[in-house]
Length: 189
Ligand SMILES: CC(C)(COP(=O)(O)OP(=O)(O)OC[C@H]1O[C@@H](n2cnc3c(N)ncnc32)[C@H](O)[C@@H]1OP(=O)(O)O)[C@@H](O)C(=O)NCCC(=O)NCCS
Image (tube, rainbow, N blue to C red; front, side, top):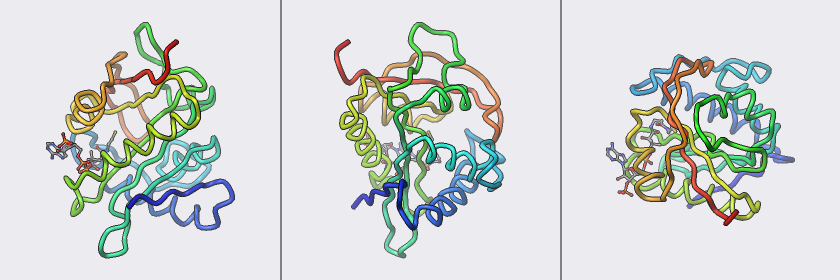
């Protein structure tokens, strides 16, 4: 069901990134995010396309599930964290005792198109990224979401044992967001 795109060397990656960027702009417009994400260009990491391009350059993998109409029903992306990503996305800018480190895995984003919601697609893509984190030998996995995004908190905290490391309010480029950072350890320290 889940298609995997290895972006490095993938000939159709750029076309997919453009579709994913369009979906980010559309699907994060609603509460609680209320993002005013611009499609933008690949050089601007505060735009949807630039954000995806930055992550791709840093080694992100992308997965998607096709709908019956042949369009993308759901997609997600994640990567092994680098200093550049932690700094550019402000992932460690919160009070707390545990922060993302290079080498940890980051579930960087996901969305399901409205007609395809509540079919388990997001959960399937969460599992894919946990599998990728294990395959890379990552010690810890991170997810950031809006504090009011109950579906994501339920999917990761209630169903997959993630814990809260901290909350903070910051400008994400696409809009100001009060975020919760959640993590789960995969390996014993
Ligand atoms: C969040 C989002 C990706 C969920 O996608 P989805 O494919 O519908 O999610 P799933 O069907 O896999 O459901 C995941 C869990 O949340 C629950 N859930 C899904 N939608 C729900 C809703 N509207 N209300 C309550 N629970 C809901 C499901 O029941 C499931 O839990 P369960 O396994 O215990 O039954 C989708 O709503 C979306 O794209 N929202 C806008 C963008 C966004 O928030 N992205 C995530 C940012 S970090």
